[in-house]
Image 1 (tube, protein in one colour):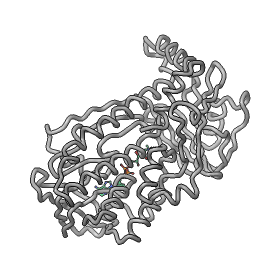
Image 2 (cartoon, rainbow, N blue to C red):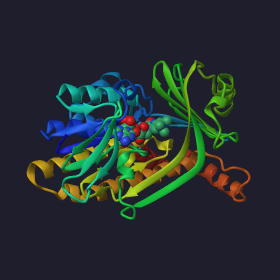
Image 3 (cartoon, helix red, strand yellow):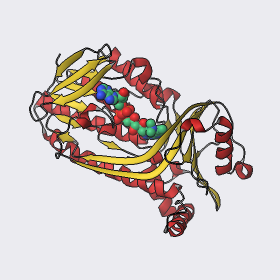
Image 4 (cartoon, rainbow, N blue to C red):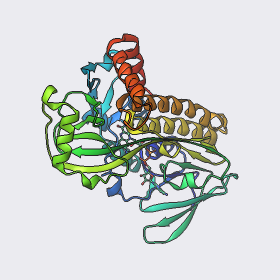
Length: 392
Ligand code: RFL
C-alpha cells in the first residue's frame, strides 16, 4: 500500500489534517486503531476556543458545531472567600468558547472526510514507523484480524496521541522529552443531568477541587480531585454527589441537578512536550506532540491549530515543492504549545490547595488565595485571564 501522506490516528488532529489535505488534492490515508463506533462514542473535550471554530469554519468543517454548539463565556469561582463570576466574553479579546462535545466533532469530521472520498482504515493499529530519515518512510500495521501490512509514504503524520506508534518510533536521543507530573488526579465524570449553573464552575475546597462544565442540555461533565491511585469504581453515585455538593458549596450557592453518572475515569494531571515535532519524514501533531493537563481545556484546540499548520506545510511541499513551511513547523507549533502549557500550569496552581503534609503548604496556599483575590478584583488580571483562557 502507498499514499503520499499516511496519517496515524483519527482524532481531531488526524481528521482535520485529512480533510485539509484531501481538499487540496493530496493523496492521503488515515490509519485508525479503533472501530468507527468506538471512535465516535469517546466522550472527552467539549470547550472549543474561538480560533478552533475559525479554523473549522475556514475549511467548511463547522456546520455541526454551528448548528448544535452553544456559545459560552462565563466562569464562576467558588472558594473559601465566597464566589465570583468572570464574564470572560466581555474581557480580554472578547472571545467566547463554543461548547460542542468532541465525539460529535469527530463524527462530523469523519463524515465530511468520507463523503469527500477520503480513505480511512479502521481497526488498523500502527506498530512502528521506519526509515524516517529517508523520503520513503514505512509504517507497519496490524489489522484487527491479526494480518500485518506495510504502508509506504512520502510523509507520515503522527496524530495517534500520547501512546501511539509515532512517539515510539522516534530514534532515542533525537528529541527532548519535557515531562511534568502535577501530582494531582481528577475523577472525570459525565452525568446524565442538565447543567447546574449557567457557567463553568471551579470550586476550590479544603477537600479538593471540584469542577462543573456543561456539555449538552442533558449531559454535564464534573470533576472531583481525588487521591492518586484511587479507583474510579470506589466512588458510588451517592458519594460522588455528596462530595460535589460539599465542594461546590451547594448549601450556600444552590443545589446541583443530580442524575445517573454514566462515565467515571481517573485522570492523572500530567503535561509533556516532545521537542522537536519533526523528525525527517515523521511529523507529530496533537497529543502525540504535547500532552496538556485538562485543567485549561486546551488539548483538542491545539490539535486543530497544529493540524491546519501541518496541512498548509505539507500542501506547499507536495504540490508546489516549497519545503519552507515544514522546515519551521516545529518551531511555530512549539510557541503555541509552551504558551498553552504555561497557562494550564497556572490554572493547576490556581485550582488546587496544596496537600497539608508539604512543609511549604501554608505559604503556597496563601499565594493561591491571593492569586484568586487578584483575579476577582484586578481588571488587567481578568483581561489577561480571558485572553489566555479562550485563546490558543
Ligand atoms: P486523540 O483524540 O487521542 O486521537 C488519537 C487517535 O489515534 C488512535 N491511535 C492509533 N491509531 C493507529 N495506530 C496506533 N498505534 C494508534 N494509537 C492511537 C486513537 O484510537 C485515537 O483515535 O488525539 P488528538 O487528535 O491529538 O486530539 C487530542 C484531544 O483528543 C485531547 O487533547 C483532548 O481530548 C484533551 N481534552 C480537552 N481538550 C480541549 O481542548 N478541551 C476540553 O474541554 C478537553 N477536555 C480532554 C478533556 C481530555 C480528557 N481526557 C481524556 C484526559 C477532558 C478529558 C477527560
